[in-house]
Length: 205
Image (cartoon, rainbow, N blue to C red):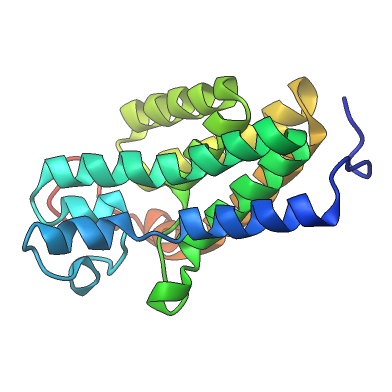
């Protein structure tokens, strides 16, 4: 396992990976797709979020699926390219930048999504096994609890722990930071889970 303190990437590649990763992550596909479909501004409905869950509240399942896939791909592509050209460090930097771009897009006043789809995409770009494991944990938790938010929270916690013991410590570290940020972005969901008012999968609430 590589040391967290040993980084084999110079400043210029790191900057390139960061900028391209952020720009990729900052594309607000949920907003773009709903406007193109004539459904207005997705930020004006439901949670006001630009992610797939809120797009689903428009009643258009196809757009929600497209948003989910595109939000994931905007993490996968820069992470995979960064990894290919600059090694694991380049992949980690580009993937994390894409994750931040989704949550804090400059085009929307730094008010973006909660980052789960992009988190999954970054994992697939860095280590496809971790992306698959995330999906399996999410599906298992969702099948038991029927809470989408809880499933995401459980899966994000599992990823850095598993990666720490089985993979690259740099990937484990960035996964841990993304997990903390994702939990902060889900604080309203956490409050509703605690109070028992969180909507379950398939409900109209």
